[in-house]
Every structure is written in structure tokens, then in C-alpha cells.
Image (tube, rainbow, N blue to C red):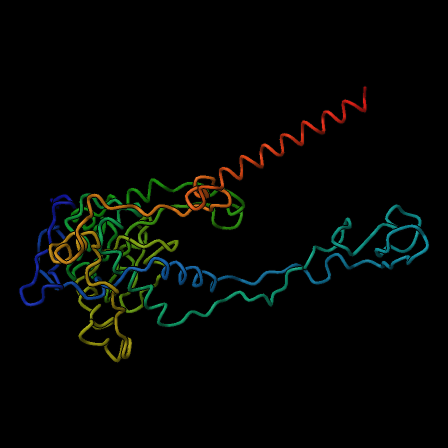
Length: 374
């Protein structure tokens, strides 16, 4: 039985420290062999790029819609003009019915057209730069190799022996769905299928009437190199998607624009990733993505707290000042009396004299007013 996910460890290769070895499992869930982790799984993860590309790719399957161009204008209506104390909106011609004389055409009128009628020549589709699309796919692939991101997306991967999950090439020749279910159970991946099956429910809203009556969570994505029956074996499992490694689609790798899809790889598909996307030492194959280079991470080590707290950095930074004097904010002497007295101690005398003069003037004014009222 596969061990818990948090206990698995990758076997590091002795000749390339940054490329660990990944275990390949057979159909019974036992260890078959090991293979090198493709470089694409160590590419930088950019959720912003993935979300941008995904949002624009989703727009490319939209169908044009618009209201009928003559809607609201199929009347014999004409404005009455000025001088009749009514609005100049076009009005239905004729007589003998309560419809005659009613306003027409305008969006504020009953049976009028809508405001700014929709047109089919709207810009429905979006062109996406090729390098952006490739960047998004590499980011989605790299995120699928991190158990934390896969779990955060809602996949049930607690019983998996490792992430990414690689199965030997026998998976590509499975022809029965019962065999596919047995394989998923043996490697601990069937929990995610069960989760997807239980999540099926009625869609909220008008989509129930538009041939999309139910919604359901996504399950695992099975990636293969050659279809020897694998598509027909897995396609009826709830939530399971299939993809050829030569045509990976971001809409399947990051549904909803959220990275961390649970992916099950066949061994040939997993090993072919280096020739498709290349490595940092060798560009991609000319028959796959000519002269394509993987995006490089801005930081070779993204653990910033570990870098800051390392002995090498702490040895050269300035030590913390225990009794450092804090800079006091400068105060405006025109609005702050204490700041004014520091600059001009005689200001207190001047202010006192001004107060006494003002008080004497007030008393004199009151006495003069009292004399006039007497």
C-alpha cells in the first residue's frame, strides 16, 4: 500500500544535485524503477501569467451573439415634431387603437429597442503571445509537482506515494475502465475520483436550461505519450481528463486559472518533457519547440528568511543598536508653542502682553457699551 504523502522523499541523483530521481510505480502500486525529474518542474511559478493566459484562452471558444438588428424598429412611427406639448420621440402612426400615438424606437419606450444593441462584430477572441502561453504551461506543470499547491486546489492526494505521480507505460495499454479503476486504487489516486463523483450537483442559474445542467469538481489529469486504449479506459471516470504530452492544454493543467492540478504521468510522457520544453543546459528539440528555453527563476533560492538569517549574511550586516536614538519629528514653531519658545524665549512675554492688551480693550468696550445703555 502506498505510504502517506508527507513521508515520501525523493532520491537525489549523485551526478546532478538539482534534478532528483522520481519513483516510477507499476499497475500494482509497487516500485518499478526511477527516472530523472524533468527540468520543467523546477521552472518559476507565475500565477499572474497563468491567470492572464487562461482568461484569454477561455475567450477563444465564445460564439458570437446579438439581438436582431431590426428589433424595436419594425413600426411605422414618426415624431410629431414641436409645438404639440409632447416629447419629440417617434410615435406610432394611424388611429383607432390605443397603440397609435405611443412612443416607439427608443430604449425608454415600451416595445422599443435596447440601448446600444449588441452586434456580432464584437471582438470575441484574443491573440496570446506564444512565449506567454508557454510560460503559463511551464508554470502550471511546475505547480503540479508541489504537494502543497495540489492539496490547496482541493485534490485528495493524502494517500499518494509521491507527487508527481509516475506510472510505467503499462497504463497506456489499459483498455477496460475496471482496469483503470484498479490501477488508480493501487496507487492511491482513486480518492480524488470519488471526491469528483460525490461533488456532482445541479448548476445554479440559467445554465440548467442551456445543456450544462450539472457541475462537478475536477479530478486527476492523466497524461500519456501514446494512446493504446488509455483514452477509452479513463474517459468515463467522473472528473478524469486525458491529454497527450505533445499537446498539453493550460485549460486542463490549470482549470479556472488556478495552478496545482493533480496529474498522473505515464513513464514515456514524463521522460519526454525534457525534449519538449528543454532544460537550462539544452534548448528544446527542434521538432517540438524550436530554440525554446525554459524561463529562469529570478532567485535560485526563494527561501528569503533563510538567506537573511544565514551566517554569511548576518556576519556582514550592521549589528542592532541597543540604545539607538530615534529621530524626533520636526515641529512647526508657528503652530507649536514649545517649539517657538525654544527658538525665542521672549515670545512668552510678547504673547502675555498681547493677551493683557486684548483683555483691557474688551473691558473698555464693555464699559463704553454699558454707559450708552444706562
